[in-house]
Amino acid sequence: SAVISQKPSRDICQRGTSLTIQCQVDSQVTMMFWYRQQPGQSLTLIATANQGSEATYESGFVIDKFPISRPNLTFSTLTVSNMSPEDSSIYLCSVWGGGNIQYFGAGTRLSVL
Amino acid sequence: EDQVTQSPEALRLQEGESSSLNCSYTVSGLRGLFWYRQDPGKGPEFLFTLYSAGEEKEKERLKATLTKKESFLHITAPKPEDSATYLCAVYINAGNMLTFGGGTRLMVKP
Image (tube, rainbow over all chains, first blue to last red; front, top):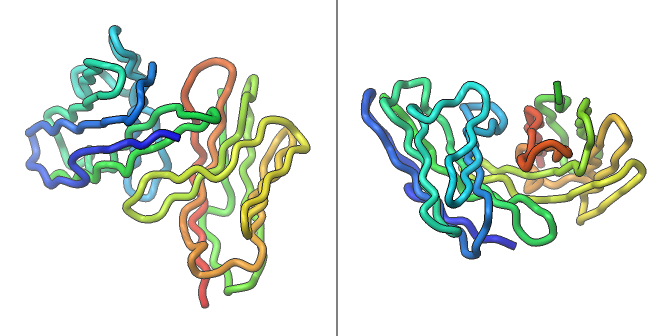
């Protein structure tokens, strides 16, 4: 299995500011994934973060809005930049673990006022 | 385009009333179909992976089945603690991520 820790667990932010979310895994992994879950909705992949290379973003998500860092094989950050109320969501980090299972962190619940 | 559709969106059951949740998919090159449970304020919790048509897996009151077009999550004699959102997701040949359906919100009343 894989144990994933996300910080912060929740935050309330003002419009126009930025928030950086941290994701720490208890084992080394090649890929880390960032998902967004809007209120009452399912999960949508934002980007895949590979250590040593640029993150790969899905359609509709851009690096200027969601910059990602991946400094080593156990850690990644996602920044939500220039926030608006539409960015209010749960942001989830995930990795592939043993048994070919994708494990998820508890998520960061973001509210933008 | 790959699509994953879950039905119903919401389901209310009485305790002990068995039912099924559906996940239909249209994808190219299915490598696996995943079921997760998500409680409010938490990340998805892994339940099952199914790899080929005809495969079945069970865990307590839950049983997942897979055909070439859909998967079912059968809940036998549910209890209030089974109340959660159930998500299915597909893992396909092209890519390393999961594509999720919209989820089914299950409420089991005592």
